[in-house]
Amino acid sequence: MALVLAAGLSGAGTTAWAAGPTATEAAAEDIAAELKAIPGMKVEEKASTLPGQRWFWLTYRQPVDHRHPKGQWFEQRVLLQHKSADRPMVLYTSGYNTPTTMFRSEPTALVDGNQISVEYRYFTPSRPEPTDWTKDTIWQAATDEHRLIGVLKKIYKGRWISTGGSKGGMTAVYHKRFYPRDVDGSIVYVAPNDVDNDDDSRYDKFFATVGTDDECRAHIKSLARELLKRRPAMLERFKAAAAENGWTFSILKTPDRAFENSVMDLEWGFWQYMLQSDCPTLPALDASDDTLYATLDAIAGLSFYTDQGLAPYIPYYYQAGTQLGWGKPQFWNLRPLLRYEDSYQPRTYVPRDIPMRFDNGRAMRDIDRWVRNHGSRLMFLYGENDPWGSERFRLGRGSRDSAVYEAPGMNHSGRLIDKLPAGQRSEAIADLLRWAGVEQRAGVLSTTPSDATDPMLQKRPPL
Image (spheres, one colour):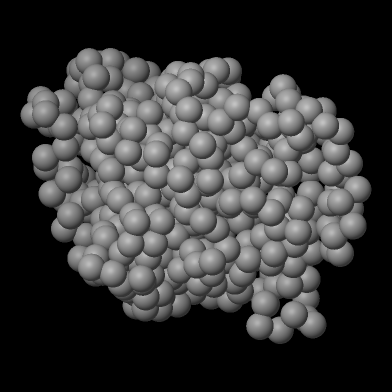
């Protein structure tokens, strides 16, 4: 099936508009006491790695089923970077686990605000035990965020902005659809919108036309084919690595099936994580077995197709196979070398003891209609060369104060405002600051490693 929805490359220095410090930012605040006073909230303060901010690891008690709150509960992990209660709050979600290092997302850096990083339900440790998988839905997750925002707004009374990349961007849209008044604007990076799960022709068109270099496209396709031709040599290396690292294959059944799934992901993985300018670094078709194996491992991440690699992402695949939908391009260039082409779908990546049933696109059609007919203060950003942008969100006659941008030549990156053409970048920043209630002033944001690198938007093995 394909790749886990994750973003690719981080941005570099960002010239931006930001408000200066307020008087209260220098004042002593007992924010920890206010947090601890919230019913159901556990608070642990950690050593901060960003100047001028305090760092709290929170766990908030949530019902597994918000329609029946007297039933089972679980603890959801939330990481808070506190700057000042009178600064804007940015709600960040990856759609997966929350990062456990301090960083500022691009919107947080631009508004110079606070940030909470919310772990998506059912990703460990935010998983109820025993696990009722039928409650791993977009509405339940949106309601998790709604409850959390409700209690934190008693402390952070300013403007709120939601953001996320890839599945995190999708999460931001779904939350705003169900609770449109919770936040004042949403910055949505590289979020696919699979309205018609039965029609994936846009992916085929994308792979036939992506970029400006015909030779690059053709070479990537030929590399995947060459890997399948050398299946015995590749499997010999893969099995040796599995034995050395203790990898197992109960989910994908065999190393051969896992290997073939990684090859089906090679072309997608290249364009998701790399740039056209990286094409010259790819090996020739007559390169050694070791070189070709290393290339596949570097782009697809072979360990990801093991039980140990797949297990953390079962909640994503469950949702892809029940509500989100999935992309399935045609592998014309790889036939007849494929043995397991039908395995390229979410059911393959979820253990068989977890029942799954696709809703035939009802949830995604509802989201799409809402964005086009009622969505407001939504900013969608896509990379021109990102496969996930083949099926993207569209604005309609009912969309208000919203925009869609495309960063030229970019991939599945999570810091795309900085990559927009100058005029569009200024427009996007002005809208974000207006939504956040931040005065626009000329300035340059300092670019520290924490600002420039969002841990959840780095290269992650595709699947």
